[in-house]
Amino acid sequence: INYTDKNKQYVIAASHKFTIMELIIEIIAVITGLLSVWFSNKINVLVFPVGMISLALYVGIFIHNGLYANSVINFLYFIISIYGWWNWARQRTTVNSQQSTDRSELKVSYLNKKENIITATIFCISIFLICIFTPKELSVRLDYITSAAGLIAMVLTSMKKVDNWMYYLLADIILIPLCIYNGLYLTSLQYVAYTILAIMGYISWSKELASYRRPGMESGDQAVSSSYRNR
View 1 (cartoon, rainbow, N blue to C red):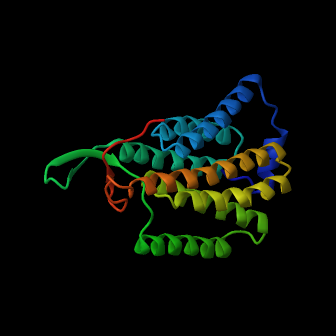
View 2: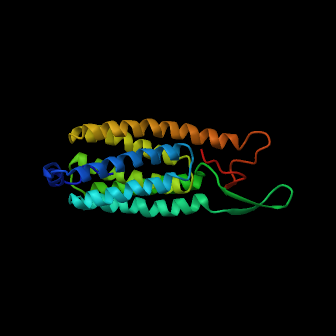
View 3: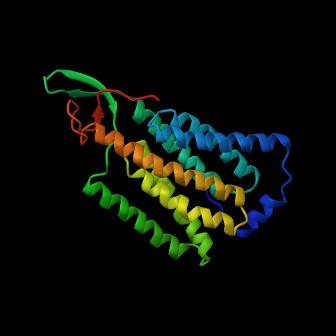
C-alpha cells in the first residue's frame, strides 16, 4: 500500500470526515489484511480470498479519498491474487517413483539461480526507472520502491516461493519509518506487525521446504507435493 504519492493527497485524506460506515469498512480492510498475511504464514490457500476482501475494500477506500495511484496498485494485487488462488488450488499430475500417476498441489520452493537473477534484475530496473521518472523527494521514491517490492512479493507468493518474504520484509521495514514520517503512527504499528509476520512466514515456509527432504519425502526441488496443508 502506498502512503506518500503526493502531499496534496494526504491533505485530501486528512481533511475527509469519516463516517461510521467508512470507519467500519477500513477496520474490516485492516483485519482481513492481517488475516491474509497470517494465512500466508500458515501456507493456507485462504491467504488469497481473505486478502482479496481487504484489497477490494482498499481500492474503494482509496478511490473515495482521491488516492487513485494507491487504488491501481491494490487492484493489481487483486488480479495477482486471483492467479495465486488458482495456482495454489489446482491439481497437478506427476509420475512417482513407482511410475504411477499422482494428483497433487503446488508446494513451497525457492527461486532457482536463473529465477533469482531475473527477479533481482526486474527489481533493480524498477528502482532505476523510479529514480528517473518520479519526484526527487526521498519519501516519494521510497514509496514507489516499496510498491515495486510488494508487487514482486505478491507474484512470488502466487508461485509459492519462499523468497516472497524477503521482498515483503524489505517493503515493511521501509514503510515503518515512512509512515511515521507522514504522521501515520497507527499504520506504522501495523507494519511492525507485518514485519514480524514476514519473519515468521520465512521461517515457516523454510521449515515446510525442509520437511520435503526428510526421509520418506520426495525432493523439495519438485514443483508439487503429495499433500496440501490447510491449517
